[in-house]
Image (cartoon, rainbow, N blue to C red; front, side):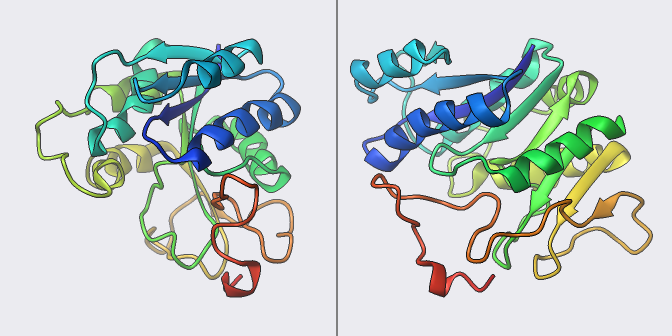
Length: 224
């Protein structure tokens, strides 16, 4: 199975609307993948029903507290033995630039994939812009922390990825990055490359959207 994994929790409409939009767009861009949502109790039943009706997998996190730890829910998919797992944010949208990068990674045989496409993409692995094959996922799953192992903080998921997963992933990692994005790999790193398709002006991979479909940051302020 090939899975695109999301956490979905909290009261913000932009994540609920974004989840539904992601299922629709992923069906077009990733027809051989299944979207899977790890869903908190705060998400209304009609949203869950719509996601399921569109073919998404639903994992109910019944009784789980909704806090920074909830961003780790999507990483449970690392344990499932999927052929490929992509990790994404519900407030972002998949696009052709992303899909082309994923296709290039999958053709490479590398176990891990990371993307950075904006000057503020300031972590080596962004929590909603990476992926792993089966063997890499199993190795990363062994590094998953317990809930109270220092992860109750902002960006806890990305800090875990930076300090635990990135050193592992670098053994078999393809990085797609744009020239203006922060660079973490040393000189001589053997598989860092440009995105295979040009950027649409004012757009970038991992871009956030509001609930009404507008950009969370106006295009004229994006610096890309």
